[in-house]
Amino acid sequence: MPVSHAEEGYVTADGRQIGGTLMELKNITLRFGGVVAIKDISFDIRDGEIRAIIGPNGAGKSSMLNVISGFYVPTEGDVYFKKVKRGPMKPYEVARLGIARTFQNIALFDGMSVLDNIMTGRLTMMKSGLLSQALWYGAAAREEYAHREKVERIIDFLEIQNIRKTPVGRLPYGLKKRVELARALAAEPKLLLLDEPMAGMNVEEKEDMSRFILDLNDEFSTTICLIEHDMGVVMDLSDRVVVMDYGRKIGDGTPDEVRNNQDVIDAYLGVAHD
Amino acid sequence: MPEQLLYAMEVTLNGLMAGVMYSLVALGFVLIFKASGVFNYAQGVLALFAALTLVGLKNGQIPFAHVINAIFGTDLHTFGWKLPALLAILLAAGVMVLLAVIIEKLVLKHLVSQAPIILFMATIGLAYFLEGLGDVMWGADIKKLDVGLPQGISETIETLTDRWFGYGFFIDNLDIVATLVAVVLVASLTIFSQYSKQGRALRAVADDHQAALSVGISLRFIWVLVWSIAGFVALVAGIMWGTKSGVQFSLSLIALKALPVLMLGGFTSIPGAIVGGLIIGVGEKLFEFSIGPMVGGATENWFAYVLALLFLVFRPQGLFGEKIIERV
Image (cartoon, rainbow over all chains, first blue to last red; front, side):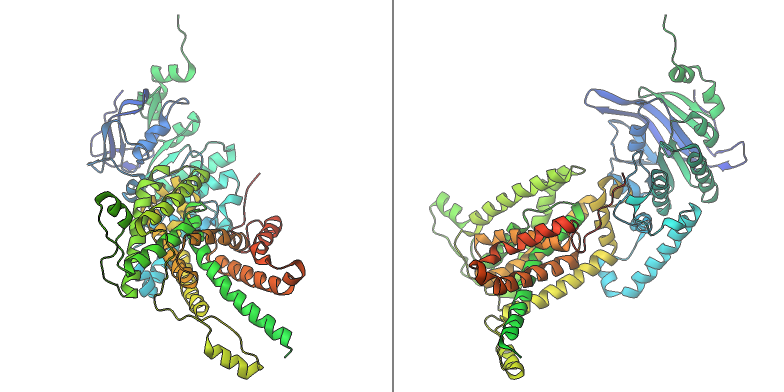
């Protein structure tokens, strides 16, 4: 069920202006040997929106996110970012384009402090190279200072001031998820990919995380694409939802449209075969 | 001052200098461990290979001369020129960078996100390969290495200490040079890994490959960089050891001496490699001096390992290593 919004964008129910297409995926197919993880899926992500990908276990959601972030190269199909076709790219090259991500199983640098972890998010933005750092200490120090300021803002925003010097390995799960989000934010991404940002959290932590996602979309107007299991959370958060099942796209639209889609209901609740 | 005390002081000084030589080898290990969480078994062989290449280049030896002669029935040995020491060192450093690129292309690239033990096995393979390559390329005979470093007993120190204490210390000039080189090397490496952009990237890569990729770090660039630096450090260690005891294949065994140094200092700390080396150097010499005669000597062969074992019991992460944190 295609959504017909004008190319120049649309206005959400809560009055936010959504822009044109930021990322477009055209006929993406991903195969691992004989296994088809994603089958001919197309959808787009608009500038400024919160886009969700949902689906039952093994539907291919994470694979989809890995295609967007460059960890997988699609077998068929094209990825367009800012209307430019993206060739096969390494994950670090995709990151440098301004696409940041978090991982389902948390990938942080356990030996480093929270602050250092978040600072790594800004590595690609640091200009001074090896030589200039050695020869021109002042400039490098000034640059470091500017980056620190940005990072401190993010730390304030995510309310993790009190743990900034703690080694990440010591933190509980919920906070680790938050630090990972902070590191992704530090890169000032055009597109932020969140792989199950609320998996394994209790109700309170889920509420916090939802608030952060809404706020950062609002304040930094970051475009967000997230994968989530929890239907309730997704429906409240997102502007538009893609529903996947067995590697196919079975629904695409606003939460209300998706909720009333018969295929989606069947996939989630099961359907009687007779 | 009593004779015994003066003698002990001289032994300590000599121990410190010997420790610096161990540290030079240990440094290479720390660098690679920091960037990939892997114990690079090939580090000792890297030093040997660097020293062999340096001697070969300096003496204008034709690489693979044996193979060429065997196949074509020729009798080639040298190009017939001798390169100045500095040029030969620069060229050898270039060869080590090239080697780093090749290692990354042929070995490491294919092992992204593999467990450290897999990478460790790869370095074992690499060690034997490089040892063989060094043999085929430059020949297996013991070679003299002289890049113009001062050698022999330092007379200045002997006369000075003789004037102060009435007892002349015997200190090798080469050891003094090695100490100065080590200080410069450690200072620059510490600054590099603590304060530079690449240093931070390097620590990130060591911790988590996926996460490093997701913040835009190129694993391949960091690996080439790290192996180049490790190759350069190996070259420095190779020059020092080669000058001291000749370039021979037992040079690759100095890697074993670096192990206890790393256990003491911590696998991830550059200053740790130095302090660990010094402690082992001094401990070894003093132990031999004080206890050695009682147990029939030759304690230098095992003292370092026993000390390292003790450390493993009481402080497994070493003196300066990162504390092992795990939430249960």
